[in-house]
Length: 275
Image (tube, rainbow, N blue to C red; front, side, top):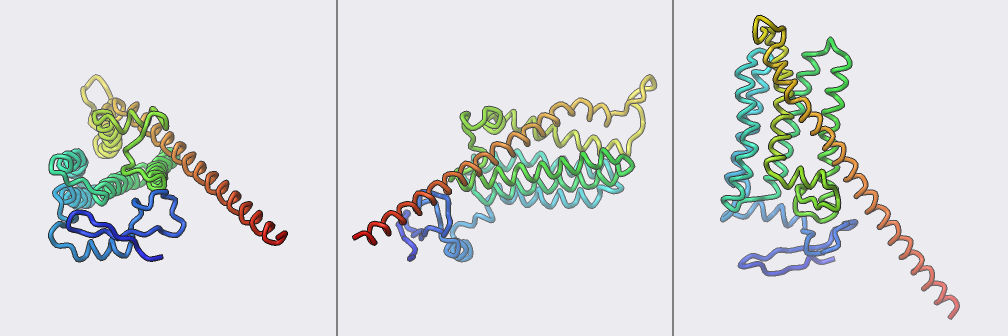
């Protein structure tokens, strides 16, 4: 099938339906080869160099530096890791303010979040290896974080959503409140990371807050953020379950359509034989 073309300002965008695509609107499906060529040859607008994406690259670099210092320099590691996490809020604001929102930037942001958290959880599993149940819990949280976000992103793509954050109340009120309120989203993400950072610092700091207690300030910080961290994991579970139901629903629709097409073909074939 030949690619379709349409004018868009001074540029021309070629589109064609992909075999097996679940997207109903042909205008939402782009020719992958043409997209690669366009990204390679376009010089007047480089999405890779958008300000929000430059901030994203800086986040990746800072995360890598924090991992380097993680085994032996806890305070320096925490400061650098914290800056990387806080920049997560800055790149989104920059994208909206400059009109530089992009699909690449959204994926870069999510991948950076998932990978930095995963690296921290892996380090915690090693640091607390003397507690087998804790290691299992950390491994479960790592798997849940990756799985819930991957399946959610995939279900958003196959339903034609322009962003994984665009959730309506009829799908899930919990996810709608989580993704559509910036303060809620920031609070859950920030406190979730703060809980794991507190566990990290707890492995190095054993000095009590006061002489009258044995609690250290990392333990206090972890305790204060534990309820929100737990809430974040519940949201991940809801996200995984809702995305699973969306994909199963699409499978059922396609199977129904396939049976209807097969029945129609059989009916037409029978009619030809009878004639």
